[in-house]
Image (tube, rainbow, N blue to C red; front, side, top):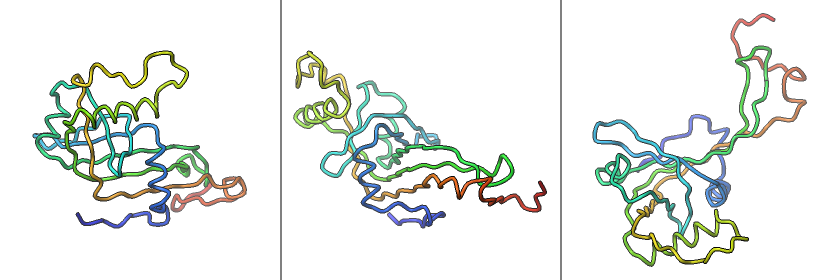
Length: 182
């Protein structure tokens, strides 16, 4: 898979930082392409296990599963927005501080019970409540979920740090609106 150049290379995140963000992010959006050619995107909790991204859904065969079975190519995105800031005199001269990671890869359905068990244990370790008194490691509905693994082929990260107040409007005017008058 060829890697297109980032349009905003000045915002490119280091590979190490992108991997760290992917490791610790909360949730993401996974997109497939349906038979009709339209993308289909769903929000999911996720894990990184052995270099792959793991997600799960119910076992029903809906639009998402049909897309996965039709074409294993997917796109997965996570982001962490920060604050909106002003850099110029007009409302449209605003920016957003953020971090985001986008990856492309091929998805497969995980069939092995031991791998599904490992996924559920790791999912509860990341998202569960440690103080719970419920039994740990017992997942009687493993057959009621579908676990997917994405082999990452390409990953990019972008970020825009919140500028210090001395670099924001009105302290510094970086109005981008052409021919603008106050």
